[in-house]
Image (cartoon, rainbow, N blue to C red; front, side, top):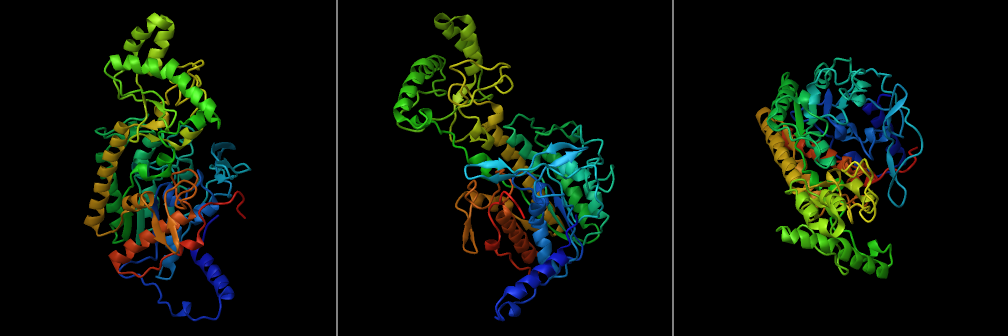
Length: 521
């Protein structure tokens, strides 16, 4: 269950030697050198990106292609030592805790969209594996989790107080990630942490709490935004401890969430006559006319009377129309709508319409529709996801069309702004720590922005953040693809070379696929 980088590299080099031609070009390439860095004992700290999480799961081949593992392979030629990863048990993904599934299997592309692979998880969390492990990437970890005793406790897994991924390889039930790193006395480290300090809030549609000003992480929920002051203190402590014995390292800042496919794939305005008519334009046109007469028209008239005409406008039969969403930042006009509709539809029905549309509006380009929302649009709300505690009857039974998408489906501008403010603050702390300790620095914020605004050209490929086709991201819309991880590893190598005068070689991105197949041999 342990990956030995040196052994695998020797095997791969042997294969290349046997299959190559007699050209001496590769033999004349200069060997990689460490410069002022010492790679003999490398440890990597971080979250799911460091672990190699991909396609919604952790699995062996994904772990092997994680950017720290790719870096470790580059370090070998420059004096790097053995690099061990706490590999899971299969390429299916998912986890078991006492035999019960606690994490889902990985996704693959079935030709139409993402689908779970066949099979069941075989990785048992309680079968703790023995390290020490160099790759200490923990899926789901936030900054403060790296210093939290008991984050790898078996007892804490069922309650959510501990992390199942860390529990299976922590040195003890009371261990911390940072202590498990320091005990190895690293000569070089990588640290990329902080994404999850805002990501849970973002992927939940902003249903968590912005904990800015709250200095006690023990009170935070899983979907909350970490207080930037807490992040700054934790991050400074991590870097101080990692460099205390003279170790050098590389750190990375954080991208904005709106550069990830999870937040930029589903358009805010997908409603057309073709969609409404199920491919039949005439039916769609009739549906638009009916919706305008029975719902959008009356709502627009009532809202106009209350000075809120911009919230809901009539649907168009010739252009794409925006989704209906709930915006909890808006003044609630439920009482006003109830009063306006009571004379025509009765008090009880009017009260229901008031409750549904009191904070409703049509989406704009400034909203981010979450990737899973794609499967919700047009579906019937249920008692559990309607926000009302009941399943609304027809005609208010189509999410995004006749019933507003809820908070969990969309990030609205106020929520996006909260995430940006926190991300910017975290990045200031990361850069300050890098500068104060003389560390290599990777600007992943700029890299992710470039991927989402045109792409990055390397080795004959243009890699972008486009979902499925862009090559940079996996099917979960958040984590990199194999090629994406290789691109990140190259960015880390570049930063290390620039800072320490090393001559690490770049990875050829053309050797890495953009999606894993259904069956991994």
